[in-house]
Length: 208
Length: 251
Image (tube, rainbow over all chains, first blue to last red; front, side, top):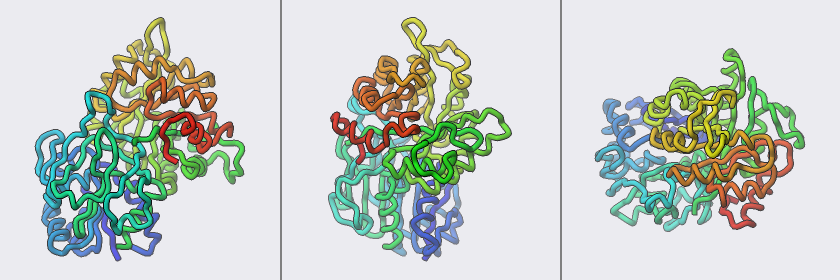
């Protein structure tokens, strides 16, 4: 089996690569590429994302054929994809970081800034927070409710379809931190930086 | 609820740990990779490397250390010391650092903070502020504490937030190495002034100091070096103590 991490030159993905390689232990091939032909034929895709919503969408679009290829992979072939951080946020129809930017539209909703309640909550939301699992999922196999995960973000995904919500976390309000819609999975937190619990989620995704 | 973080810091020189844990059965007590792994297995919420390599020729040693560590530790890794340019930041991130802390370069030219946070995202840009009290204010020092820039630390902190820093790592130079506790006044003044998280550093001698840094200093995270290096306390003990004082920690 091949798992492909999409390298679209947006932020630092070395931790994502390291964690997947650690979990895969040579049993699964981890590929890192932006080559559309390779992504087309792979079994699973990981879509990381750092920086702003706009910069990530722009970077995806700057690689010819990549967005079409991902759409085909997810919407028609229905193969598994995991979005991490801004990778998850881009599932939305629209994001409002920097300027109003169209997302991939895979899970209906929008990405807006976390309400800091006039400075009561510091942003970015950085550090370890607990997740409230609201729905069982294969990617949460052997993950306990209230597990700690590592977060770094200032924007949150607000999906219209509440059925897609797997978990929330409490910071200023209860915001969405994991989603699933058929073959599409996403975490706002960073499983690659969330110690053993995070690696378990990566393992679960690889073993889907 | 968001937890307060405990961040052990390792001073690394020419690829070797300068102040290291001296109580554990280490194969190689000077190996930063092995020490970082001990901290991460012990529940450290983040690991920080401060590269104090003096000569430019040996600078590349830190990249190897970062690369090896990031393949073994799966908690965030922050690397600082000698970070001058976008290129330096890029190299560290590519080798597996999750955040980079910028000190002197940010004082000399805040554009490096503006540009790097735009390019890599604020989440990986930490601005390190070394401050020393002078009368009723604090001044920012550069070059590992050797030069006084004369810049007001409180105003500078605000400017760094506006420039795109994701976090501030504030070290009191008056307290650093003294083990008498953080400069609480400095920490709380800066923390109240900015809306980004503050990491308190400099002066920790016991676990109550960590509690004070969070409760009175309003720090989101506490960084310490010697109390962990010399085996006075383990990260686990520190967390248990904080928890007993009502501070939310990851256990």
